[in-house]
Length: 515
Image (cartoon, helix red, strand yellow):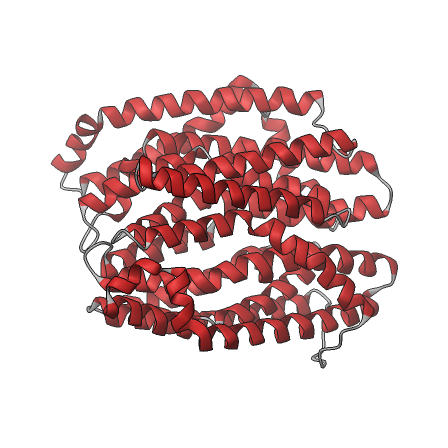
């Protein structure tokens, strides 16, 4: 939560400094941030964690700390060497890659050149994140999740520090790009320190392609494709976005809000769920595995469905209240709000992907999610191009959400057909009640937004910034109202909420860690 709030603050400052459709700096900078982040999310964090964490957890449980640390050291050497090589190759080829990443930039030589330079600057962020991901996986296997959730905050703090003093948009873009590298080193260092404090003693060794590392790679490659669906879909959307001035920035601003529940809920629960499932299967405890999946599913939807309802009920109000100022003008807010609405109804699917994938990964099945992800990418490409040229730029967001829901349906059906996981009757009952509470919340928020002038009038009369205070107050009211609706509908009981938030002493990965 701290990381995401700081990330919002970072984007508020950057959009105010760089703008959107009015300057070349914004599109160039967000390209520089998106390209290494694509590889980070696919390889360094998603695929590597899916392949590494179950193996490390099993060795830790069956063979002890020393053997697990040896395995982690070999994995660290392998992933560091691979990501450094990829970084250098991308930096050398960046002028040609940019034609593929952003073909629309070719019509503006100044924007194209700036995007190339800034992306070359930010690419070393990838190996930093690969190293951080490994140590984060070690922490998770030891039942430690605070540093894993907190280390992204370093990026936000550094970015704020380097961008706030800047006045010129281009100079701000340069400062932000160099800040990415400084932050990456700090994030890797923090995760290393945390892993060492948790008991992991991982030494630096030469890369060796041992049989264990070959097995890790065989698991990681399909997992990379499986984890890449949403990210590749977003990346493909960015290629289309390069044809419209400001669209890449609008997408990034919408991304900040709709990925908030995915990060706070989907990633957090998925990160905690994977080692717990791996440990349960190692002990052949299928009852615990069923309980973990039910809890993860119910709480994922209990926290993502109201978020989706809010994003769909007041998309423009959120963007205008938070972002419209300085170089980010009202027209940018209107366009971003359209994108946010269509990403909003995809939010539950984005979160569910993170909950259902561990059911495959914990059983060392990375190929099935890979196949589903390839289908998702194909659907997104076809729909994205079609909708972009027929209904307009917001078709990009609609295509991404449709593709995510198709993947969720495929995973759900496959798990049930194999007898691996079917939600219990109790879980399904609770999900229905959660959906009803979320729907009512969305209706109430939409009504409140309809009466926006009446709501903001007294705020302005008091001498306060009306739209900023108004959106904060309405968000706070929604945040306070939803638990009341949730308990009233019976989606979750107060006792269940308290039990989930109470960590059991001595248990390395209890249900409490699902949040």
